[in-house]
Amino acid sequence: MAHYRFIVPILSVFAIGAVPTFEDTAQLDRQVARHLNATIGSAGGARAEIDRKLRLKRCPSPVQLSDTNNNAVLVSCADKGWRIFVPIRSRSLPATNVVSRNDDFIIRRNQPLTLVVRRANFSISYGVVAQKNGRIGDFIPVRASRKSKVLMAKVSGSGEVELAQ
Image 1 (cartoon, rainbow, N blue to C red):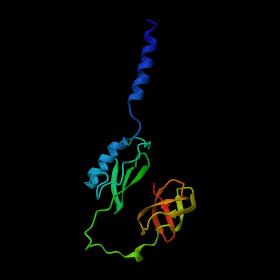
Image 2 (spheres, rainbow, N blue to C red):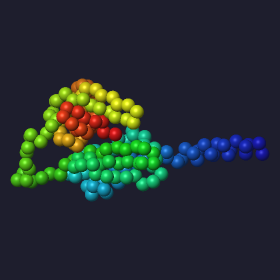
Image 3 (cartoon, helix red, strand yellow):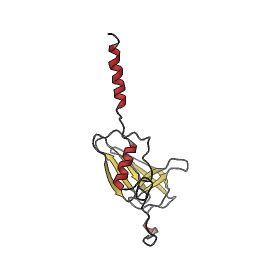
Image 4 (tube, rainbow, N blue to C red):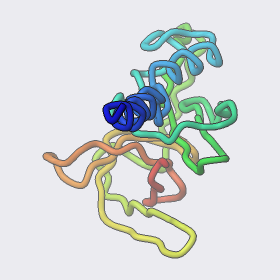
């Protein structure tokens, strides 16, 4: 009879571990693909899978997907306060319809920029270098140095980008 006292706590530990506490990024990838009507890596689809190492708290309600512009989809959970931007591969256009206007870009590749991280109580800014040309509202890759990690940032003005959250 004394052995039964230990079985209930042990079983409850296993039951707690069985419930996933984080969002399934593979499921989020499938939702983004349905939203865009294109597979990962294809024209009009996500550029790559959502990073599997992300630990996004499980959203109690369905996640929200919204188009931010032509090169990203916003995936968010208002209940838990998280949001991520999923970069999109541009759709290929026939060569006759492509209008190349270099004067539209306000950010040029290899241009030094100020990266600004804004939060409710503070903001931080530091120097980065653009890895691609960009217009206002575009998401472009930036990095602090050649050896640093590439970050996706939104072009917010001339010489300024904001960290994509």
